[in-house]
Length: 393
Image 1 (cartoon, rainbow, N blue to C red):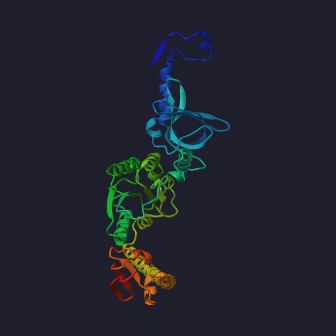
Image 2 (image 1 turned 30 degrees about the vertical axis):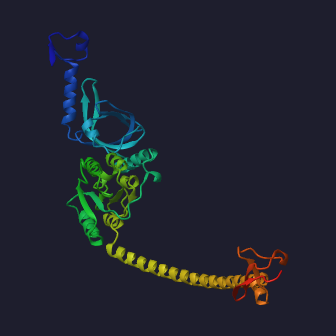
């Protein structure tokens, strides 16, 4: 508001001021200047290139910084709502392209740029965000090979996290069902691009893990622009991928498309179709392989049995020869022993005319002086025995 004074100081009259004099408050002047700035169409939408300095983030989420070049500086602010849309974190010394409106902050009387959009100059904002997150996650060890798990060679259940209406899911279904219809295929629908896509992908990963039936997860989508694929470059998606207990194959876009999830996932596939081929072993090929292995094993066993039979026959022949020699040796020993026994046998003496004389009690008579007339004796000959009586002694 303004005030009107009836008197004009003499020094004011000397300077040619008119009577009466109108005086404005500071607030009124700032408000007027602000209105002038905001009424200017050119200042309502400016693209300004400069270098960031004095950058800091308020607890409210608002970002405050100064844009400067060689000859000037411009105070700038980016409110939390716009800052949340940033794909990178600004830093001091970084050259950026800012879009916003020029206005006056009445409390300080300072005009400033109210930034609505901010992009890295030189390196694109998406590229810078990709590089920053890549470096951050790499330092945390999320790309290390020792934390990656093997993709199961023969999964019974495959979960696919993607858009249920995209071409990618149809390609995956066609390949898996064509190669191996025995595999259970579960589609976990998720938003794959646009605002909120990263959160939706992370949610789907957590839900499939909580379900706990799938042996492997295919996470991906078909091709698109860098902006279309950006949900797979966001930290929320990357951390959910890293936290998954179930092995994940990242299959985003085409072969030339590289995303953060490709580095975090347990395996990267160049396309969704390649991922499907990776998890679905060909049933017909598997049957042919098993049949071939059976034939190979059968031939190997047959050859082994034949070889072992020949070895056994040879061993048996050797054993027969050894047994024959051993038997012959033992027979010779036995014959020799028999000959020796024959020589000392009383029956040999019997055959030469000798006889064994025994009394009636069975004791051998070895002396004639022990005999008396009338005594009966048993005489043993080679062909029998007789009883005799002593007539004279």
